[in-house]
Image (tube, rainbow, N blue to C red; front, side, top):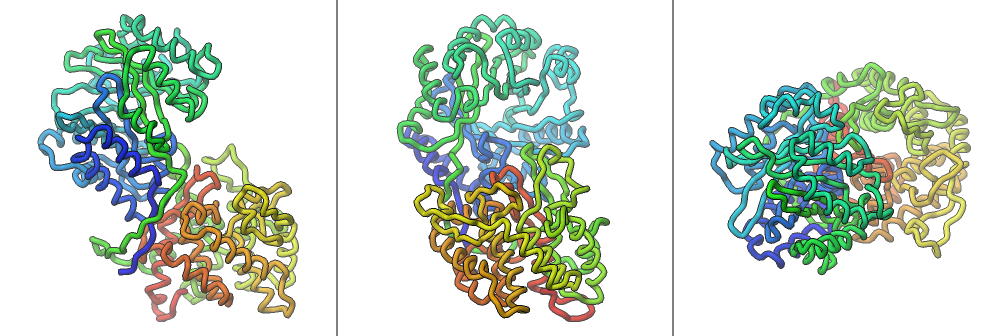
Length: 640
């Protein structure tokens, strides 16, 4: 089958190889396991979203390493096995399947006991999971152990499982102490093994007195005198040098089988604690020197100048009063390299959904739904103009589709926030999960909605011209190739900014947005003799932009900052060519290796320019798949 492109962070394999050079014993275990884990992400069509949307690491990376002074030659690797799709099953049963695929077979009797306990904990809560469980692998020269980190949700944890003084460690008591239990770590292959409980502190601010009070709450205040000097040293390495800086703080408590605490750790977000990512290792190095400790694996990574994101630093003390420092880090995921991936037929045959079934998914508002992943890892159903308009682009007007098309067009008209300005949502339906962020009308929604309303006969040509006149107020007026921003190397005057607002940034110029604007401009070329001035400038810009990007995925991604997958631009270009713009064929051919595989159930669609919100739509994917392979029921009429 034809090859498509996929991507992987540039630092991904470089980091693993550096760790193996310092600890050669890792080659036989770490490399094959991470390779199996990576393969699923390379094949999922998520591209960058498969590597930057996890809750595991500070930068969204689904792979994290931890080194600790308590075992300098050991390495802990944590993997988030789940993909960033709303349909992903996060329950422990699904986790166990990923577990078996990634690691070598283990004693299933031992594993099932622990997995069943995690399943009971998940089943006790009605709240949807945010990350489910993470897979930890503990590598030492003597062998490998597995640790499972399972999410704890409100109402999902049974305090009777606590070792020791249950009444002091209930959820209510923890809340009163300013703590919330986030997850539990345990070893599924070891029935008699320590459990680790991870808590988040309720505030971005903390003091020595707060930490001492937490230790007192956990009955390990006797360890405070041993931990305090290490914390005082660490605070002196922060930007202010005098007090704990504002950041996220957490604690972990390891309980042994004797129901007593084996160790206590204060966790800090590395970057914000030390000031920035570049200050983290120098700070850790100073602490290591002051305490005669070593982290040789981390030293090797830094010596080789592997680009890493420091996630968390831990300051620990065990029951013998021994202090320790741990550091978690991930490969940086801002730069990617392109790899070929061969399409493979789906392993399980699924019945294609009928047009009738898909049309029945239309919501009461008239919208066709999508799902959005917010920065806290939660998924929300979303009814927006753009996905609805994209669904309409797949439909022919037939007796079967007509009422659904009209209802969807009614919804699109409610997204006009002021005359000739359309937004992603109706003004009266701004989603609650984005209550603190308002967005204005945009060129993308305005162009695609105006095109569809005109095609349906709801707008006259005069009204289309009026809309374009308003859009012209948001055209690029100045491009300077001497400027550093890459957009200055390919942008064209008279192309369109994304947002219909007075202040705009060229760094957010989007080629797919301008392709939709070009489609609307083409309406006038069909009806008028004069070519709109922006028309040839946009065509020129799109070609310049793709030539500038070359074979560099990072540059290609920068051409469409609001689209999470270049396949969306490819789809839009195909639609534009079908609408009568043959000049786009070279662009379509150049982007063909970035198209989505046929029948892809879910894929990244849109994103905020900083990537912190991600939209997908199994509904839209199903309509597109059907449009390419099926005929409308009862009419044998091609849908697209």
